[in-house]
Image 1 (tube, rainbow over the protein chains, first blue to last red):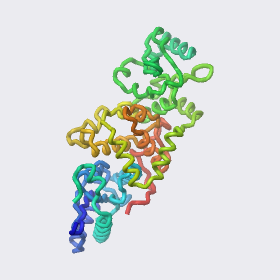
Image 2 (image 1 turned 60 degrees about the vertical axis):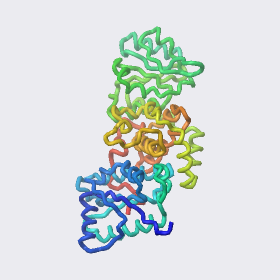
Image 3 (image 1 turned 90 degrees about the horizontal axis):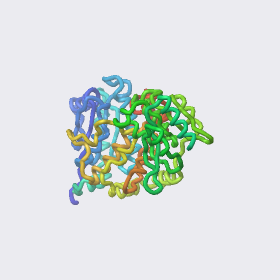
Image 4 (image 1 turned 45 degrees about the vertical axis):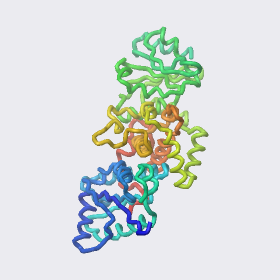
Amino acid sequence: MSEQFEPKITAFVCNWCTYAGADLTGTSRIKYQPNVRVLRVPCTGRIDFMLIMKAFERGADGVMISGCHPNDCHYTSGNYHARRRWMVFRDLMDFMGIDTERVTFSWVSAAEGAKWGALVNEVTDKIRALGPNTEQKQLVGLGVE
Amino acid sequence: MESLKQKAKELLEAGEIKAVLGYARGTSDTRRPHVAMSALEVDKLVADQACTTNLANLLMKHEIKHLGKLAVVASRPSTLRSLLQLTAEHQVADGAILALVPAEGGVKQLGTAQAFEEHLALVPQKKTEKDQALLDRLKAMPRAERFAFWQKEFSRCMKCYACRNSCPMCYCERCTMDCNRPQWVPVPSHAVGNQEYHLVRAMHLAGRCVECGECGRACPVGIPVHLLTFFAEDSVRAQFGQGGGASATIDNALSTFRPDDKETFIR
């Protein structure tokens, strides 16, 4: 592998906070690395843990999950429910040996454009250092680039 | 055992129940579920250490539900825990099912969720030494080794869904596994689908598993699938202070929340 490995990162973000926050990153002219593919969902409560697994199955090297801060949910409690689900899901992933380092959970509000930019950069650097998600890719038979 | 038969006959004769769901002799030393609707059938009932099936699973089946008011032989505490959890999830009405618990020198008849809870307080829930040892060994492993362990186990999985079908808490009429628009989990028993299937099963049971271990016993190729749900249950209990099968009145841990839930990983 002569070229540097460029990770693919899938981000599931909520419509009301992080998506608007990511928009603010752009309108504020803050640059961040282009490895992230942002997918907008209505609420973090909508993010089924299977979406994370599907992202890995389709070749993502890292996944980001982001939504409104606690108490700021547009639907009052979607993020609280999501938080509980992640707390268990993350434990279970680790127990099954799936790398939890590749999944980043965060709260990014619509005003935190700078936080989103910095976070994407940090996650991209981390995943680049971790390398391709060989374990999951080999399961699918995708092979490793 | 005689007192159990006696009690069952009395209840049937008095018309209090329509049938008794219990165990009868199966092939060789095994025991199989048995529905007794008459005194003659009651005589076939057996209650001993070999009765391992969690009968609560059958209570959710249409053909059993249609029989009318039932008494279930609960020689295993997990049957009572299942009933409590099913009551909490509004699948069984409180008081709709009688439990006959074989006890020393007789049989205990329990009719309400409160009675189940009181009885369960006397028999503490504990994992078997073998399960606990494997759980501890897995937790102590480096992550990559644990991944290899489960992949090796799952490689034997042929997606027969015996673990799902034997589970008293997997009563959904339409399971995610049967859903093909979208097809969440690939149907063939391939590494990806196997991993996803077992993850889905464990997540859907987190906070609801009554730790009867029926899934692990049902597995024809001996994958310790029950450890996944046991682990999820431990995680829920440690983080939210509640678990499956403890009470007929509390909400499932993952369908409720507390604003001050503490985690360490959200940025």
